[in-house]
Amino acid sequence: MMLVFLYLLNVVLVTRAFWVFRDGKVSLQILIPGIAIQLLALVALRIDSIVLTLAAGVVLLINFLNWFLEHQIKTTVNRLSIRLVSFAVWLIFLGVFSSDLFEISFAGWVLKCVQCVKEFGSMTRLIEGSHMFVFLASTAGTIIAVFEAHVAIRFLFEMLNVKPGNEADNNTKGVINVDQVDYNRGRVIGALERLLTFFLVLQGAYGALGFLIAAKGITRFKQLDDREFAEYFLIGTLLSIILAGSVALLTRILIETWI
Image 1 (spheres, one colour):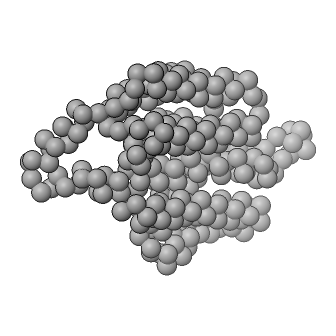
Image 2 (cartoon, rainbow, N blue to C red):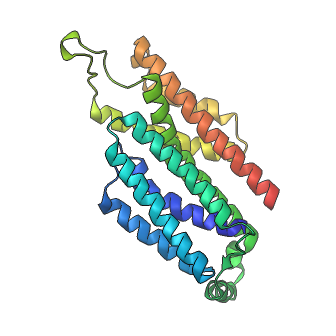
Image 3 (spheres, rainbow, N blue to C red):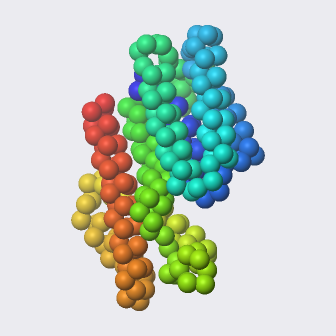
């Protein structure tokens, strides 16, 4: 059942990754293909037709409700909170859906395909249950640390009113001027930082985190003289490490518990 949960979770995470990293509202052009992938993923499962219909209905409900609420909300902080809540709803739904309550497993054709692949040689041992579990758990943890954590960090920035850019000018009525190119560059750096943090913590290489922080600090050395930027830099770095590290620890505990 845990393999089913991780399989479905990865499908949801991958489809969400195309829009949760964006600042704007999710569009139907991105949402609809994601929904199609999520529904097609159910074909790989052996499931009762009634439960399948209910599951498809819940998938549509979660996605379109998320889309509707994002287009009704005007503030960024509320839109980010909707994305966080929708992710929590996905976790609850997938947890219940893949539990022993519904006795869902992979379809026979999937198992036959796996068996056929195994006959090609020893290298195919990677698709065995334990190795597949590690792969799916690590993949899910990676996507959460890089993309879903980004939403959490943006939400905290908005709540704390910690934004990149210059101080507000008295003539602009409190509007903060943001260098969008620098902002996007920093966002990519943050994603790479969380990616490295995740794998370092997952492997237990905690000491290397210091070198990661130092390397990031060197690139912004001159800008750290600006107290406002230095505080923003510190908050972002600590949040990235805490969130990515926490996800890595949970992933590691999950793997060690189930393997």
